[in-house]
Image 1 (cartoon, one colour):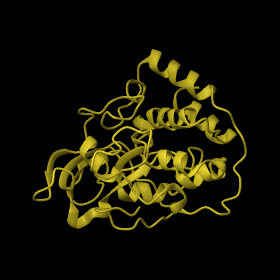
Image 2 (image 1 turned 30 degrees about the vertical axis):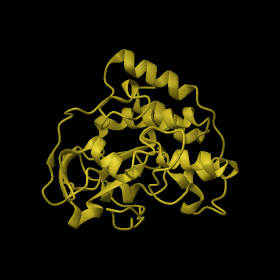
Image 3 (image 1 turned 90 degrees about the horizontal axis):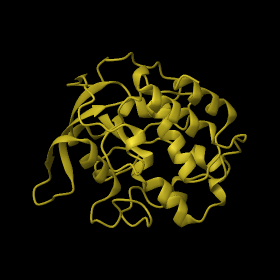
Image 4 (image 1 turned 180 degrees about the vertical axis):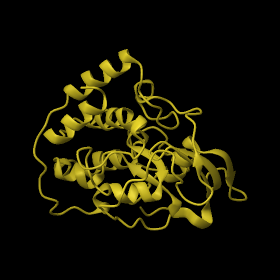
Length: 244
């Protein structure tokens, strides 16, 4: 993904998933949940991270949410381009938290999820280094701007996936919301994000098994908020992650 601080994302499909707790790049180690919020307690996406869903009551609530989603087949990718969702990491998307605060969406997310933040001299926006507990791989990444692509911002519901599920008929303003909504955005290890590409849950899940129900919930939260269907295999896979 293109951003002020990021190198272009190389979309690579079919990569072997890393095992739980494996290194996520130079300087990576095993992460703790730390201050990460569970998705059911973070319905607007403004709290950091993605904590596992483990309590029986929470998994039941997760399944109820996923069960409520409509399903349809995935349409063609014809006409899709990233610019249809506005320029990358725009601060001017209306109707989403953190917009119009003078800081682009990518840096907003780094500030939300990162710890031990350091900013570019004279800026309280541009992050040049941080520590990130990556929920997808279960590792801690010591990130520096010089290796920008080691951390990428994942669209939980990929924009290309959304396009194929009917978003192509939305107004440009609503597409800009989806692309910049913190509910749909998580900073993660770059290799994991590249391996995901535009996959739905039936084709790709986070390498860390303990986070998969939380990931399914977040995917469902975005779909519910934007009244977007998911494919039947994706819905089935999401239910399975939460004990369904």
